[in-house]
Length: 112
Ligand SMILES: [Zn+2]
Image 1 (cartoon, rainbow, N blue to C red):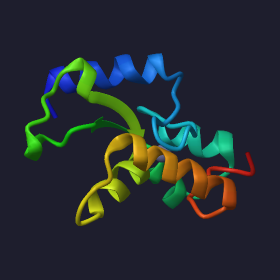
Image 2 (image 1 turned 180 degrees about the vertical axis):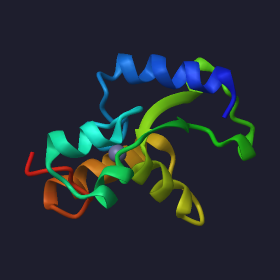
Image 3 (image 1 turned 90 degrees about the vertical axis):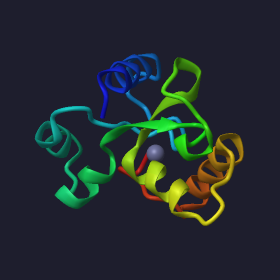
Image 4 (image 1 turned 45 degrees about the vertical axis):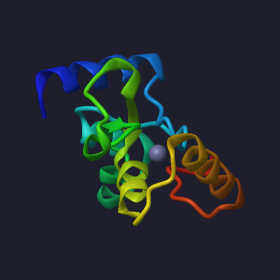
């Protein structure tokens, strides 16, 4: 990861108050142990809530490492979006994630 992306991720993390752009749940940046203790969850679940830099338009599709193309997203939402053959555009994906969360069909950090 380049310094530029790290810096952007940090900025977005702060702007989003530590919450994932897609699912809105809390993420951790550096201290997995503290996060795990704080939320009383397994290590496996903790790993999925690591903060990542998400490219709204993928690099492979010409999206740059620039401010308006980077958001902070949890590893789970990030990976799940890009695991699709045809990833949904960010707005539609966010709506889908939120709808699934409401119905209990998405990864949850806790009871929310
Ligand atoms: Zn998420």
